[in-house]
Length: 135
Image (cartoon, rainbow, N blue to C red; front, side):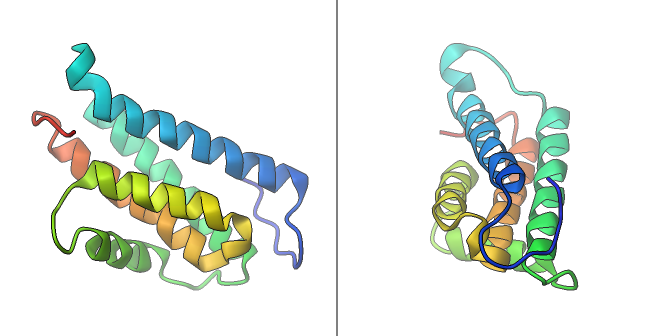
């Protein structure tokens, strides 16, 4: 994602990159959810690497929103904990956070960044639970 601070409507490049990020993240979450059903497995190292890229995108969104110094990782962990307050279901939390980030879009600024980061937190939880059925 190109991190360029700007006001108003995001550039078409940044918008397209965000939409691609959301689509790929949805594919990753679905592959984790349905892997046990199809007999496939998802490599925990791949999930962790993907989560790292989500963190990078979340930080870029915060930068574009003029919040370069924001603790995106801390905010993301807080959002994840709120999503799992009743029941620790990382895949469902990831879906919820991703849908919310997609709804807000780049205009959601730091909130969108925190939600995208929460997906990364959820994916890390899934990666350490890779031996367990997750859906």
